[in-house]
Image 1: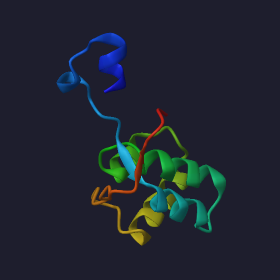
Image 2: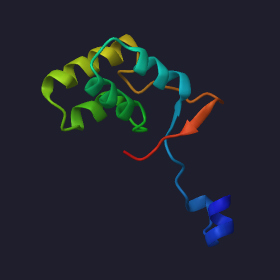
Image 3: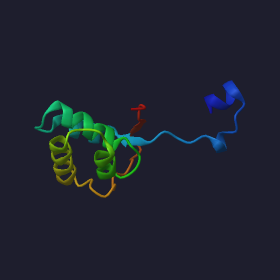
Image 4: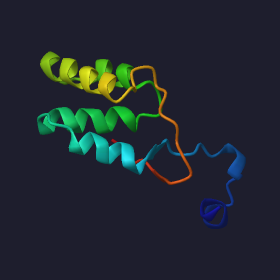
Amino acid sequence: MLRFLDTGEDPQHVQPAPRVPRDLVQEVLDLDCKDAVKVLLVRAVRSGGKPVDAVLDSDAPDGDKVAAIRALRELNLTAGEQQAPEDVRPAKPA
């Protein structure tokens, strides 16, 4: 709405930013894994698509990718099932 007020751009043509539940990001940050894997996971869940695809498409080392995919399986997010509940915030661009 603010964009329409500022630019006059039709809001129907504006793509919403991917959204991710706040508690999911906190779950990722609470995982027992190295920080590089946590960063990869946060980017993957904020990608708006399938998190596993986002991990595989990243330029992270293979070991980090494997650890991230295992963590996604723990969180039950391997097929992009994350649902954005009412308590969400827009994702920041990577």
